[in-house]
Amino acid sequence: MLTLKNITKIYDQIIALNNVSLEFESKGLIVITGKSGSGKSTLLNVISLLETIDEGKVIVDDLVISELSNKEKNLYRGSLFGFVFQEYNLIEDMTVKENLELCITNSNQEADKINQILEQLNIVDYKNKEVKKLSGGERQRVTIARALVKNAKIILADEPTGSLDEENGRIIMELLKSISKDHLVIL
Image (cartoon, rainbow, N blue to C red):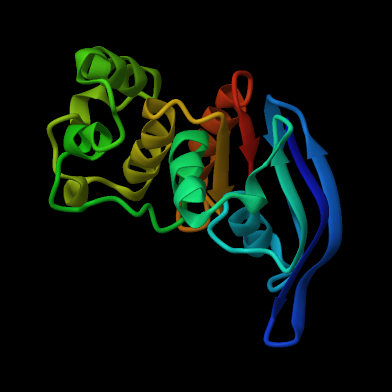
């Protein structure tokens, strides 16, 4: 489903990725480990088209997405990828439901889909609560809900447990593990 062919990414003469080639199936949990500064976040950003590459190709389902126009990349990124970041990237003054509604294109299905996903993640009781009033673990579950609501094929998680306590970190990892049965999850 997802293939990286000979990816090279250079920042001001510093080689972040050097001729990286990887293949990923359509489902499963992939964990990328390495020292700080080894290119893990850069790899996720390259996969998701948030950053351009200097050489190589990013291919999804036989389409070379790294060669699309910027407009096409934006459309493709919005429909293909779900993001779970350590910083959450939620709109603090909006409710959980309002944050999730931003990702839904078909309003006929939105209420049912949001409720179903919030139930699955055990945060349905927080649906009408402002994000700024949630704990770190609850916020991280909302970011996972956002990725699921938009029905992303590939979920990219950059240190999703980095700012959480041990118990919430364990809960988030179990959720991502469960989600990987139906999605490709790259941590």
